[in-house]
Length: 277
Image 1 (tube, one colour):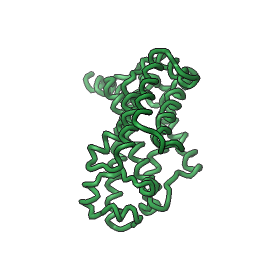
Image 2 (tube, rainbow, N blue to C red; image 1 turned 90 degrees about the horizontal axis):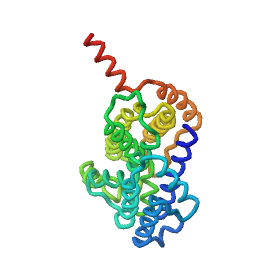
Image 3 (tube, helix red, strand yellow; image 1 turned 180 degrees about the vertical axis):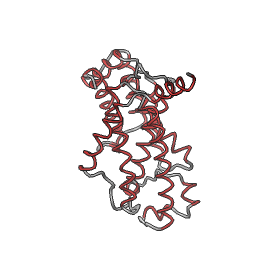
């Protein structure tokens, strides 16, 4: 990426990490809703050009340089509030909303910095939907990878109605039982996550060329975690699925080649023009 875009993405990443640490870091047990209210007020100061510290100043510079909207940042803070009061999700619709708040928002924050290719013929909405899908896919992958770790914290980020339909209970998860029912359930969850990765590809092809490689790398590398869960025979209770370094390195050239391809909307437009002539 260009140095300016790289600094801007770094600033967004740092803010997201600091926000996540409020409810997931070493001092999370002392964090209250009031603390998140104060963090949101501080966010508004950042967007108004009144940073509190140097890390805030980096984000202030980003929002001054790129057309970044404050709403996805506010929504991420709302996701942290949800984490304070909620540890179960009745349906996938509920889980989807949580995933949007804590991860889909990152895609929406990033598109104005990444930029859309001048060759793209896609609607801006298509690019944003792709970025949203990548954030959702990554978060769903995190959830499936971390089932055992979350259970040890008393949390279950899985649709309860779908668990019940599969004949599974909370006890099965807390006891870490890898049964045929669990394998079947996990297979369905992985299929859903992969469908979001496929939607993300549609947006990734439309980004500025210098921004595509890191996005494609993220997409291909994170999607491989799902393969590793399957390779572990769906034991995400005692085994943490991770992609070996050799596989990561092998994915980078593939991501680079994908980044060199013209926007798919352009090639579709060209094919349509050729058919007319």
